[in-house]
Length: 318
Image 1 (cartoon, rainbow, N blue to C red):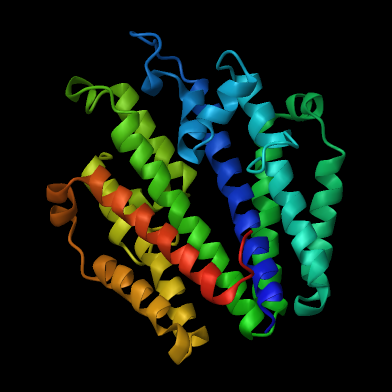
Image 2 (cartoon, rainbow, N blue to C red):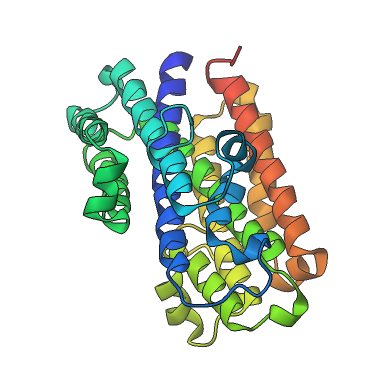
């Protein structure tokens, strides 16, 4: 396969996954912002729900360069429909559609039609319409378009190299997102030891689980109150949880085993090392090491792995 084609497929899937992840974060943040609890100490990052998607996505600096104050309307405008923010849902769908258009011969017609129709629909949307129809309804639409695209891909595409690069991009993006939201909740949003176990703490952990569709899974597995240790176990080590770091690395490692040759074995080795760390890891060891430190290390490793994949398989960035 041409490296340029692989590059477009890889980033097409990453942009679709990023749009869905952004919709998930914004939907949970919107619902959290409606909860009737008082902020005892104004100005704390943990107390303001709308800081969460900005911190998680690493866009806080860009946001405050554009807006003087933090508000629901400003954050939603910035992260949903801002054409100058590369990580907004609008830009992610546009980039995914452009990538698909440039490699139409490598994907099925159903896949392209799905992305093209999603792009045509969001082009007709403005913020007044989002507010009128309902913020959650619009974000549900984004999530369903992502689900539909994955379903169409799985149901219509030949299991060739193109499929493997799509799969690779999806799970790299997903692993990065899961690690980020878990780190933001544990390290940034928790104000003090006195708040552990309180109402705000409980709702934040519940919101985190809902943002990765893990709330029902948590209840099914643990049948108990939500605790940070068990959330960490669910979202890091359990390979039967679709959005856990372990599950994502299962897909990434398996895919690299398929596409690597002797000249790219170092990339496969790096993925295998990270996969083994999750496959044989223990929750107690992670907590003892420090959850924040563990997640920062994982994010650095997954970023390095993404750069190695780009350097060996995709079009170099200039």
